[in-house]
Image (cartoon, rainbow, N blue to C red; front, side):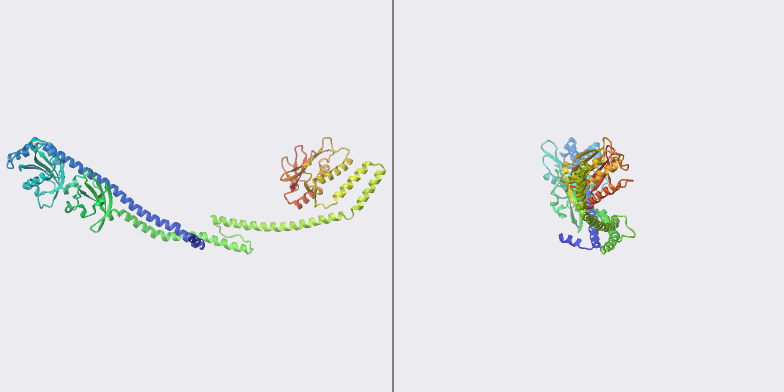
Length: 597
């Protein structure tokens, strides 16, 4: 199985389509045709079987009821005193025969029975003395001259006397009117008492020509009906020449072991379907049979129809399969060609008609991929260019930092001399201002791209605020909340420019009582440094919205904030930098977003 799967997967796509088409379309069609044929044949057989069983049960019931009627007729007749008396008379007593004839004409039940059951041949009453009289059925039935052979009737009665039950019970069997006759009769006979209940004195029997049995049957299904007695002898068969023969001459008796069944058997070289039902307790068997070719005539029509359907559908299906596979494979081959061109660095989109199916979607996605790859290449080019520019800017910044360190001692010495004069003149304010300015200068001339601790930035900011205290006669309240992040790394000269921006813009109209500046830090996934004021605010900031430095509408910020923002993004990436928003007091909060390193 794995080899077949490997073989299938290793085939070209067109061959896979053909194999899949055969497996998915043709094989199921053939299977369904075969299934329909055999299922139809079985269904027809099942319907015939059920129909035959029902008809056979009806035949058994009809024969059983008719035999019971004949038994009742014979029992009713022999219970009459006229019949009992007649059986005791001598065989040459013609007067008593005439009396019995007159009696029969007066008996309404007998006349009605014979007229309604015109298939009855004769009803014979024979005394053990040899006297005999017979009542005959409707003359419309097939004429048989042997019916009127009285000598043979007496002779038969003598034979029946030996085989009939001595207790007066009836018996049913096949017989001939006389020795050597070819017409079979179904006979119902019994012995009866003439002068006492214990001494049998006569015989009564009713004879029906076996060929007339279909008159008894109320319903006969399509096909032929056979009837066999409990010993297996045919009581009725459409071919009257077979009546009286044993059923084993035509088929095995083992076929009838069950209460009911069906089978197929050859008769005269031709197959016949047969279904039978046994009658209990008599053991009689009713068999319905039909030639197999006649039974399967509807399915043969279906077989021919399916064959023609296959002849028409096969080439049509193959043609449709070819066009179906072509409609799929052509766009795939077209897409394959463009992808090879893509491998040769030729960025070409699929042009021409694009189907509206999944392959068309794949083509559109390919075009989108080519477009995105072109944009990506352009972005990579721009990123590399920006990276080169950033490296150059970083190098220039480092060069500028080095240049600021070329002659720092001259400035330090100058500030030291000013500080000395201030001390000699006892000018404490000038002394402190010069001292803080020198401290800021020493901090500022270091490399601005090298990180320091937030504690260093806070110390530098305090030096700045000390100088500002001498510049303004009224200072805003300074609120500190930075203890949680004092050891966190940060770029040099990043917090002081934010506070300087507050003095320049937030309190541009002057500092009043109640003004404050809050410096706070927070550490989570990122490190946040915020400078909050309750000054005049920035007009471009909407309440509840956050802005990047370059997104504030109608506002251009100065060198300080831009320098801080650019240095942070240069070192840490575009995701970091300065964020601004309007706080609850109407003032501005400047947030510095840094990575948590």
